[in-house]
Image (cartoon, rainbow over all chains, first blue to last red):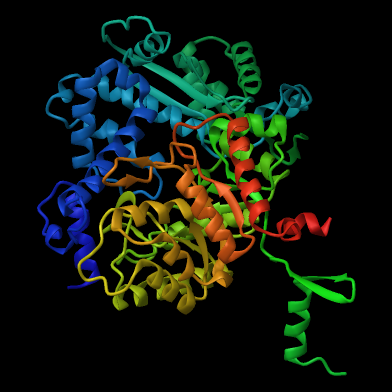
Length: 263
Length: 315
């Protein structure tokens, strides 16, 4: 019997699959081999349950204990961990929720899980310095048209067809959540200067401006795009938006071509 | 005089001893070059208090996987605390005993964190955690066979080569023993560490837990372990179900583990000691009070000069 075979047998047992491990475990003292093996099988379930419970507190409250426990049980079966860290174990939960026979009938539940995953991703995204508004004030006006932006690694877009952020906020505040409503919403999440995760709703102007800068366009190109969609001079709105981004810590670097903007 | 290899070895040996004169006799006190003193496992719950209070402890152990992230608040705290305390890194998912290939991507991240933190050492467990790419996130015991020894030794050597230094291997608590095991757990640990030339993180609580679960004498385990290999102790609590004991790390260190700690000190001498608490985590002050018990037992058991942490001696 090889080491690999024995390891496969024990893992199968822990995962609730058919296994012949019990014939290879010593049965001595007051506890049977079965009891001994069950300690590992139970721990397997509990460990992953705790991970999802920690990562998805709002989803857990929203579903209630019975539905949440069933979801966790089925997720552990469907998507066993292939990660070194438990931090990633529930990364595929939103996907699972679109496939689960019971919960796929409530597509906003997967969206709620996806929002919580994005909060986690923003929480431990890479560190980077955050530019200050003074850097934009100090920028030579002639350089403004070629200004490009580099965003903080924690900044991410959450677009959803449901009011799940509102639901999330109500549960967080221990209030009764609203009924799910199908409505397109876009939020931006980021980690602020105190390293706390924040999110804000963005309109189509701000989203277009963000995506255009994130795609590497300069301010002149972004302005032209915004002029097309807003049919009015976007300059003033753009400047105010840029300062709000700087204040929130969204921007790590202002790039104005050969003129490096001093920190 | 030409300095030969033997002279150099002798000089290094003497450097590791403190020589004091007592009357006409010269008393040579064995100083552990590796004794860091008394520490705690660094937990998120205590980040703020550690930085605010700068508690009087000698070092922290950090769970490597918790900080294998790109950035964010926990990592910020980690580096801030590192500025004030020596650290050691403790991993939970190297899976050194698995028959899957070694995960080089994991090792790369481990080395990155190691280079960032510059720990006194790094450790993981003598166990396997998964197979066929599936991670059970549990510390699963090995069968104590020649095949398992050869397998683990080769992998520890590869990890040590990659990391460029020796590692510490920790004994795990267990609830099963395999029918094919041919030797005791401590003989297995001994063989692995001697052949792989690695060190031991000796978890006193795990030995108590396994001794209860498998009906062996924990003192035999201690006596069967080479003191020269032991670099660190873990102390922890567990949950006692009467017929068996589960290693939960959610209680204070109980009396039988303290008694075993005393036995371990007698056999191993001064070893860097810490309390490992993973659940139901008490306040930092409560853990400091518990660490004082370890200090007191060590002071009662060993010579005071032996208990000067290495880096404090150098100050």
